[in-house]
Length: 154
Figure 1: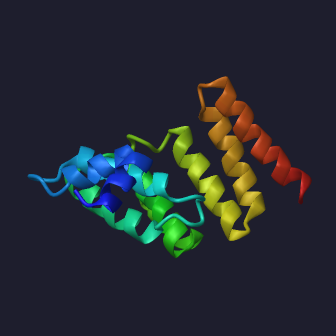
Figure 2 (figure 1 turned 30 degrees about the vertical axis):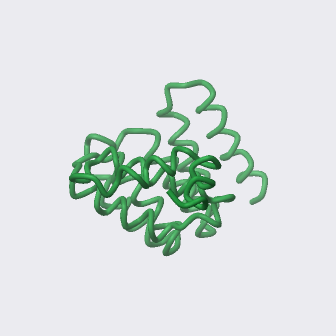
């Protein structure tokens, strides 16, 4: 193994192991999820993340999985790569999926994307809806705080 590869493995062993494992055999959902996590891990900030690559990996993962959570994460990645409106379009399709339609995560993502797009009133209402559906007190507090912050700025 060349010295630079050894240095990379020492600096981030998870990414190194993933790089070694991906070319071997068929790529499945766990390898794709690990690749997505590795891209996030390598980025120093959310803004510096390689969002187009994450979108491509989620599109592969969607072919292997009929999970609404994967579709939700894909919508977030699309929004980060192509803009909030592109992510909101994908969320519209998810609202009819009964497996996630009543889940606080769908409404929290909608709130965040509406906030990114500048629709603070819509974002506040979505944060409030998400908080009403969340079952965890810390999640409820976080979502209500986000809604309150937007109400103060209107």
